[in-house]
Length: 317
Image 1 (cartoon, one colour):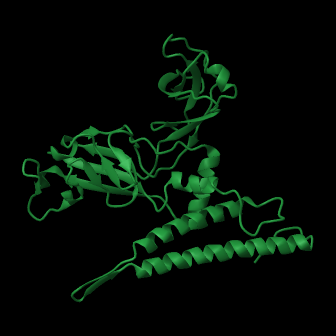
Image 2 (tube, helix red, strand yellow; image 1 turned 135 degrees about the horizontal axis):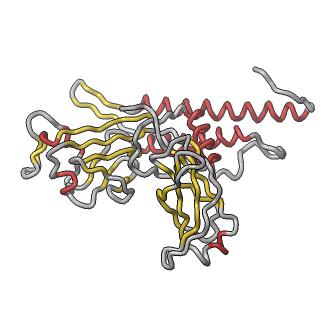
Image 3 (spheres, one colour; image 1 turned 180 degrees about the vertical axis):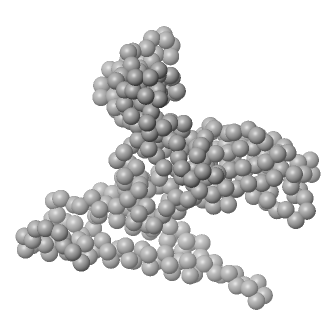
């Protein structure tokens, strides 16, 4: 596995979208290897009323590549002139080639928010592979062979596979077929891959291979936590709130949700001399949450102290 990515996001701003959409319904995206090169159509995205910013993810892009866009009417086949050449920005998935669509196509600002919150949480995306040999499964009997339990992650409906860890697919290869559409298979709860037909999994005679990013929190969960912030406790009277507090508070809200889920699933199981308990994990989550709360509170108190004495400059602890 090569630990690098070839994926580029292209931001397209359509300021007068409600006027444009009266004539066109799509944005066509073209790519060339150089500024003055030959531009070839690589994809399109639908125009939406009142939506002015669009992001297209080129899974086969290069940082040195250039892009042009145009508006297109899929009914009349009328197309506008192409835009000036632009370059996209690099997105690090830690894997190449990415063939399964990302959950979100992030703008520069969104990517910065996600990365900064991940830094606060120590939630680094990693790459993992689930790989099973089809010969370990007897499709006609619906049983595994020998001591190989690699197919235990396939549910009884014969269509659902449970990934070893929470994450989002980068590539899915089954019996030599690459699945590159977000509806086949569908990702459910960042844990399950749901295929439309049992045959997709249960007629495997070759291999079943999935590369995926693992994480505690998905990009979408992080952005949702950030976007829901309308007030940070303790900041009344502060007219300009440092952006770093928003990253901290989003991290706190994510940990609160995770802690509550862990607490709801608290369990202690004894089997003879063996005992399983997630109490230690819950305690660790609780400490992590408390530490972030204390850190945010201290930063707010220090900021208010500096304001009260008109202290300028940077505090160094």
